[in-house]
Image (cartoon, rainbow, N blue to C red):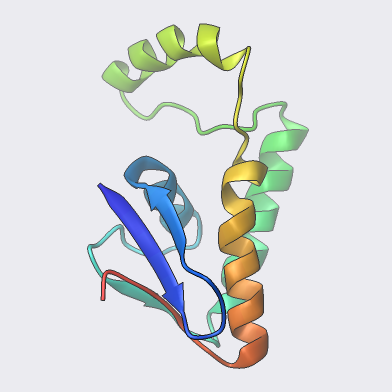
Length: 114
């Protein structure tokens, strides 16, 4: 499944489900099929994403920690591959942060699933 984040102020940002749901969790939004980040909510969302990026980089982990035993096993297998090509939270969040910044500056909301 894909998430398509849209705004009237900028180009769409399309993400895979896992990445999008991780970002939504960080900004305190439910991982629902539809949603909105209003202009008023955008600064707090941007701050939350940047704070989490800084926290993970300070701990030396750019990616999400596994949340279940199955995910831990999958993560252990994936860690070997990830050492070669790790996509950090900073890299995954950058297009979404940019969308939020541009949209906020233009006074437009960011929506998905509509």
